[in-house]
Image (cartoon, rainbow, N blue to C red):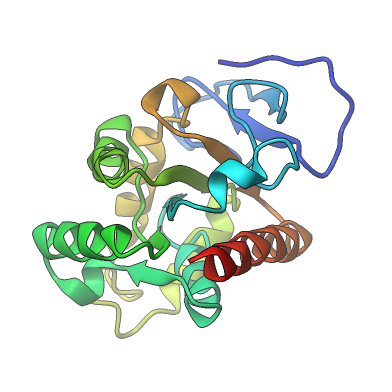
Length: 222
């Protein structure tokens, strides 16, 4: 993992991680302690939004993986990006992973930026999309959602038409905790170029604005 002594700034990336469980949430099966780490643009995870490398990124599409357990806010965020011109990939709507992969590579090769609306909680799950992105010479980014697990459970409990997790299914809560136990925080060595963390509405607003700036730059240069 990465460590820094840098002061906080808009480009800092902060993680709450633990060996067993999920970043930013309580774990009912483990008393693991949370360890805070910061990643800044001077380190391995660079920001495509900094002036030092914005030129490099503006001529390439971005594949943005959303990372988080069910109910953490991924789809809401993804739909906001979609409204700004991103192509959204959601297996709940495309039905199979193969269809998702086909859609992704087709649009990346057309120079369009993609947001992957899946949980992506393990390194193996993320590797699928990273490989597709590298084959299309796309920038790989991720946004980690650290919504507390009790809020995630409450949100999912209100779902009535979700194709997989029904709010009234007694097994749903266990499924959410299973995702939490499987969570593995992303690192640059996976092939990820930049990472952001969302815990508050302010985080979401700031990151949406930053990503919109990059998409606008891509549109002007294409």
